[in-house]
Image 1 (cartoon, helix red, strand yellow):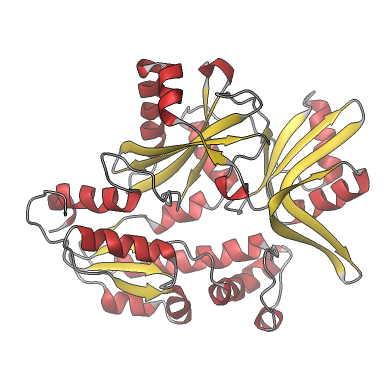
Image 2 (tube, one colour):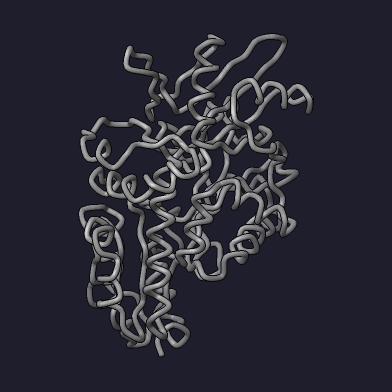
Amino acid sequence: MADRLPRVSLGQVVLIGNPENRRVQFFQEALQHFGQSPATVIAYCRLLQDPSQLGDVLKPGTILRIESPGENFDVEKQILCRGAAEAEEEGAPFLPVEQVGQLFFDRGLIIHPRQWYLGFRSLMREVKQQLAAVDDVFCMNSPADLIEFFDKTECHATCEAAGYPVAESFNPISSFEELMETMQQQNCQRVFLKLAHGSSASGVVAFSHHSNRTEVVTSAELVREKGGDQLYNSLKLRRYTDLDEIQVLIDLLCRERVHVEKWLPKASLKRGTTFDLRVVVINGRARHFVVRESRSPLTNLHLGNRRGDGNQLIQSMGESNWSDTLNLCEQVAGLYPESFQIGVDLLLTPGFRQRFILELNAFGDLLPEVRFEGRDTYQSEVWSLLRNASQYIP
């Protein structure tokens, strides 16, 4: 049974995405749930070949949603091709267009994230131009914001400059040797190192160095072959203690640009585990959330971690403290008023004494089975569009 809402039509909704992806399916189902016409889908593979086709579809009153380009190897290759020239120009590791064309799917292989980011940024800039040419188009996630969300260093700097609590970060690190020197200078024994342009925990490293013992826990698997060393995303966390392997792994990541910040202690609800939070802010209001509980430093759920008990968390924190936590998420999301939905990753320290913003996620609303007021995230987004239709439909 559809939710009770004023009889409003959203009119034309256009969705940029990979048609076969479940994200597209979920959003179409949410539109159908509220009796809306399905969105016109513009596939990334077509948009990358001819960005001007977006302008052919847009008209005043259109609502545009940009979905993740992920989980489609052909799209990944096209984005890499688009970023090749700029990556070469700035001296970043890259694959020429001809070599990208010869790539075959190799599950988990991390292929030049900086080159990918430059290609994605180029595409988003073209989308922005197409949007600027048509009046009264409401874009649910601004291309400029997406570009920044895919640069962890830039996004971290924006949050810090605005006065929001974030982990202390290092200046740019270009090698394992430089990382060790910086940690020594700052008397720091534990850091998180993340690919600046990674997502879904790709290339995330929890790095510790105590009394000449160095250890890494990471989602990256180092594969050493005659043809060269490669990194793969792994669903099984890897633990490295061999210093030679660690140096190779860190150097490979640093070549692609990394964001390094101090490793903060996390709160716990259960002995032997810690957790952090993913909170989805929709139209300025914190709604759905997930407690990401883990026995390892990395809490991403696709790495075999589990969802914790949200009610237990709220009871443990107290309503006032919980309310302040949601308020913080809403305030930091307010730094990006042109993004209708934002996934906020947030850390609570032991005893819930402090809160820190970990990351802001462009496509952080994929939380299947998580409901707020009876709706999943996609339904909440469409419901909020309908409730506030006069703001978006001329």
